[in-house]
Length: 308
Image 1: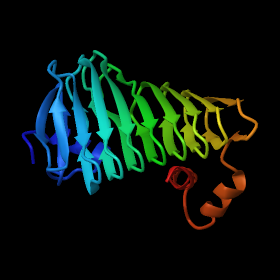
Image 2: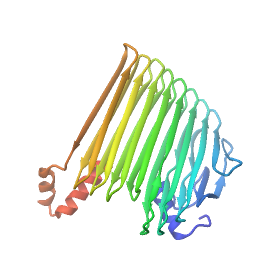
Image 3: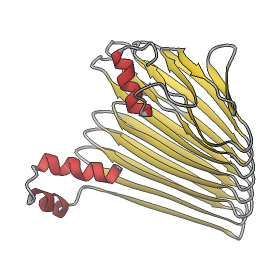
């Protein structure tokens, strides 16, 4: 493995499922600097001159390759903003794994703001996985504010998996997308907050080309006194189809606000929004408890299945 301590290695496993140096292209950032980097024949990773980000260039026609760019922070009081630009060549089919984990055992806040821009070429396909995780017993907060911008050329596709399950105190997750003719966007968000954590998810999707389509679905759980907001706006500027959905479980004294937004600027724009917020059904708990689970075990089983 790279020169990292055991806490950093544990966080890497959480946010990127990395147990060893990954195959293919990668850049691992630890406490503000690169802890390891590699390019391949088809994928070039170029560091910014100021050290605060990367330019990743993927050649046209690249297939069955991956890029890993996780971030690990274990230094209390560290705050950084990182800019990563991805240029994905025409007819490519690649997987990009990002994510950030913060372990804060100090009294100062630790914060990582990652701005990612994806320029997806004609006919290309990209799967993007972003996981956020927090740990540590310090009084300082773990703060993550990712911004993701996706620009999809004709007949290209982006599939995005956005996950935050544990330990992040404050987050505002902003995703913007612009789709040209025949382009498609699929987003699957999974989110859980607890304690007094706050989480805001913002999606702004513009379907500008005929035949473009978007499907944005969020599943979330708010526990204890935590607060969540899901704000999704789909704009149809052409003959297109769009669907957004918020499906949430509320527990204890948690609060959830779902703000749907649909804007149709073309007579053939077909847009749908769905939202459901509620507590765990009593009959679900009873059924699992009759199988031998305690109430606490039954609750965890239901949540795990819901967020899977």
